[in-house]
Image (cartoon, rainbow, N blue to C red; front, side, top):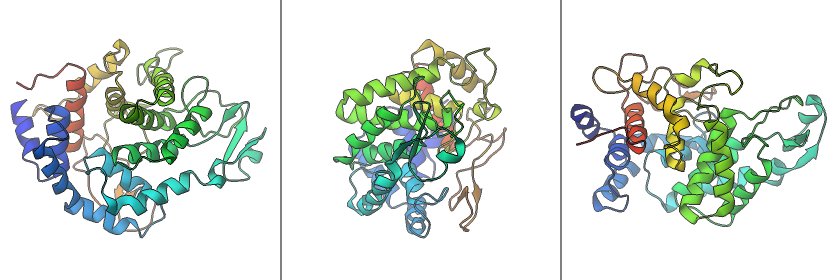
Length: 331
């Protein structure tokens, strides 16, 4: 354990050191040392690349657009309240709160649902990619840009929530179950907003969403216990809007549900993936490296990929989860 921590604390990436010192070792966000580290993050080459080139792309371009850039800054310790980010944050919030994106209409068929931008309502369920509003809420909260638009996002997520606690953008009228991909990120944003404000609607909506994951033990079908998706049990960083057990456990920890016994099997599985050197691998990745406008491409590399090579980002998150679950001794 000590060797892994020493490696993470010696990382050239200040964000890896931030995740380790705050998430694993429990240093306070308002301590002088962490504030100095966040300033190092703000001026780091990784952040300069993300912010410097992000304006070249459409706001939602995967994974270079402003929507995704802000999400990554919020995840790895960028300092809150930086006025330089305000124009970018405004663009993201204006996009996902634009009347065209929120227009609701009743429809019966997939063809009808695809005729316009907005929120088709089919069989009483809103068919919306709620991860978009969820990510915007998470970024605005963590990066320190809460204003009157945040409660509006909470209100929308609560209204669009499906009976089983999640969300889904599937425009097949027969779809009756929420999507893990579309549900984890709204849960994360709502939980962050609740922590920051004590908002009751956010808390209740997050609790309903957490139950969706918990009753599936984070990766199993409720009906027969079978694996829901093979990629759910492979580790990645970043996950963007996609899902794996590490991301699920990370959000459970952030939202205060990691002690629920139904997280136990996923925690066991995470521990089983630990490498002989004490770290964890990124078994797959959801991006390729390219400066083109092609979808699912990145300008920065998030470390090695493969089942036998330690990835610092995955390792820092895995240790953070295990500490929150009471499964880590850092002494």
